[in-house]
Image 1 (tube, one colour):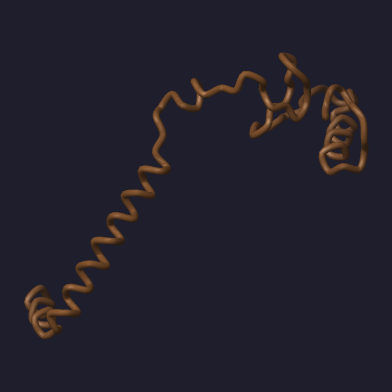
Image 2 (cartoon, rainbow, N blue to C red):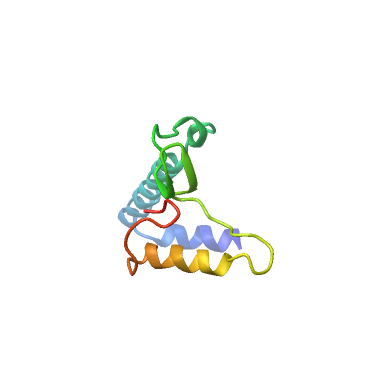
Length: 104
């Protein structure tokens, strides 16, 4: 198999081989650059905490739901989890104005 590949490789024009090598090298450089852009230091997500936490639900130091985080509403049957969830969703999509439990 290798021998057949090398034979085909020798049949290709020199200019085409150089072009293929250049393209391969550029792609490798691009992949390396993209990897470096995505790479972050291990403590960045902890140490780069903003001074004021951007809140979806809450204000200042009292934040129940921060931007970029998930939320889980739990409780016993009949305590109003669905109502709270409905109010939060209505505020988030803009169908209800004003503060509801400190949400904005």
